[in-house]
Length: 120
Length: 343
Image (tube, rainbow over the protein chains, first blue to last red):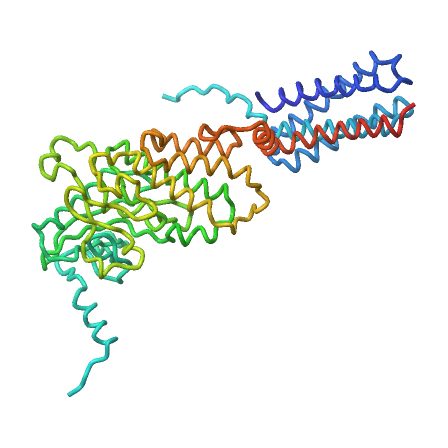
């Protein structure tokens, strides 16, 4: 599986799970659908970005760092739009970014090479 | 009357035994080591302007048994063109009748010396798999080494691994044209001049003929130790490789000293299976042994070890340490958030 696709899938799945975990907080249980959708989209965007980064840069440390940065920034934006819940959103969101960053560097394969035609 | 000192006599004796390379394309440089049947010198190939290793027979008998064996050793090497096996360049006879052959001059260290600088167990195991590659290739060509031990493996300056000293090699499958020329057992033995051998070489025990004992104690298989030549086959080399693997894993000066015993149980199981007394119980081929070690390196289960649940858990943890820690970190953070930010 190529790095971008792996990032996309992992980001989406982990984003959805991260969103679902909000159900454990009774105060926001009523908005769970919106949270899950938002978190899934956030994970998807982060996953694709991290996947593209992993395709360009082959470094586990930088991949993890980039994952952390993307996860943090996106989670911060979401928390800012929510006007609160900063630690509840930013901390898990950042860790999800790290996980996706690690996974894309460690497990993601190269994208399929373009077909070449023999010159003679 | 003036007496010569022992040192002078020794030097004169050494000079007297130096091979006369007159008439050949080689110029003698220095004595390197004593191998089976003869001495190995560093020489300069004047024609190709390169350094070569020149192995010369001890006895000046071009048509004798030892000459035939040295020729055979050269032919064995010649048929084994592999990056892990030292290539032979030339075979000939000196003016004094001694047979010689030249091979690649390997600048490096013997494995037993080299591993003193290799403190990482995975690195040592990767060296081992490269040795296995060379031996597996020889087996595929129908050649048994029969004297695999750390002293017979050289590690080059760029990490290249070369299996040396094929003096005890046995040819299992001979091309038809060659088969008729030599003794049916196709056995090569080292020089019986054990008194002249180096400290390492003196460990080797050799007796010529049926019931011959070939190999080095500690590394030779039970069937070799019994002199049961008829039952010496690929699995005998596997025994030696198992002993070599044990040697590579044994020193405790490994950097990853935090590796628990449980982790080494799998390696010990691999060594035990490779060095089974009954050849039938050993690995069927060197490739099987090599892939088993590779599986260990990859954190996969090995067939030689029956894993307990705890062993399996530890192995999986070691294989997926980072993802497990990341997921654990996520769960811990989520739990802490629930506890401290519960609203």
